[in-house]
Length: 326
Image 1 (cartoon, rainbow, N blue to C red):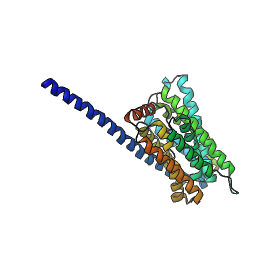
Image 2: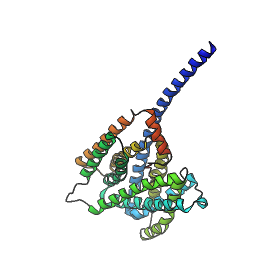
Image 3: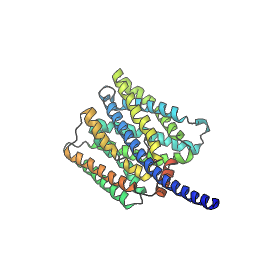
Image 4: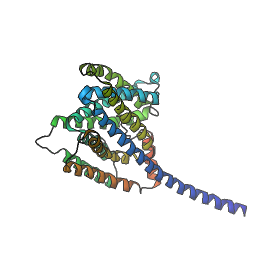
């Protein structure tokens, strides 16, 4: 009797454990989504706050201060052991530092010319392209194509089109895609966030002469420096740590597609902080991106626990990470 009872209890416990694992995976995914939304909001509010300093210190001055703040914060959090790095670890870190700085500089130059919402939406082409290339589900492909079509609408030629601003945003998109791919390599070769922290630190050093020249040519005020510093915190520390949390709780492909909320957050931040109101065509295109993302989120949430485990594992090791510590 005792053996039978023990066996029955053991089977019941295993079933409960399986059910608990599925429930935990589902709740963890929704928590990850909530954190991603918080990080996206913080990121774009930070970008809008930094744009307030453009008239005083210019985009280059804002980016320099942001890079300094990002480097200081991420080096303090990651604490990379730089002396132990091998050349095989250093070259992707150095490459990521160059891409990191170029991505932020070209994005802020684009924001200055074409506005926050359009610049961020075009920049999203980077992770969208990576998500499309790595996806194996027809639903993800369809959602990515819908989002890509909406971005094409945002890029349509008009008499007032600023092609240089669009080109700068597309360079930022290419840099973001490169950052994603380099982040995978760094994630394989360096544990934790040490590699990303080292890249942020190197990028901050590279921007020391850039910042000195920019701030010499455009003497800063305390308010402008404060706006740039706040942008560094809101657009670096909060989204970076949030992405690390989310990447361990959502599938990596879905993470890339979910980044499409950033144009929406940018549009809202641009409207509330900078007074930039998109036209109805732009608003419709952004809503199409949101709809594509919602469909992807709904289908991913029905995937079984085994698929969630695979996605979480790849994200946790840095595989497929699209985290962007702006």
